[in-house]
Amino acid sequence: MTSTEDNKAVYRRFVEDVINQGQFDAVGELFSPDYVDHSSPSGAPSGLEGVKAVQGLFRTGFPDVHFTIEKLVGEGDKVATLVKGHGTNTGSFMGSPATGKEATWESTGIFRVADGKIVEHWGVPDLFSLLQQLGAIPAPS
Image (cartoon, rainbow, N blue to C red; front, side, top):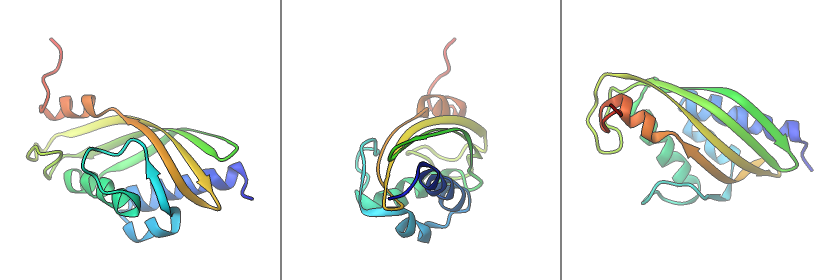
């Protein structure tokens, strides 16, 4: 049985290795083969390939993407997170061409960890704010 601190360490490693450094080979070490993302984008593959696809989407659009963990709370087998992402949009993102603009956005999530691997995720990234900063959605007047 793993502790809450062990579960938080798994999440921290996901942010640092996979998101911030683009080490997609670490996905198999950090995620269960039966991983379920209850918030995956429409059309995204499931399981480990889905994790790689979503991270690839951000890495393509924002090659310098960097997430900072703002809040990290654990209880039992769950880890709740608030992260802040930052990057420069130098590649296509969600069907929109590169803008060269910098953007900052937040994302909240709950991750369930079992046997040292992430097995489930529920999350809400602030894509609306991100797309507004890129000019893909008009900002309120």
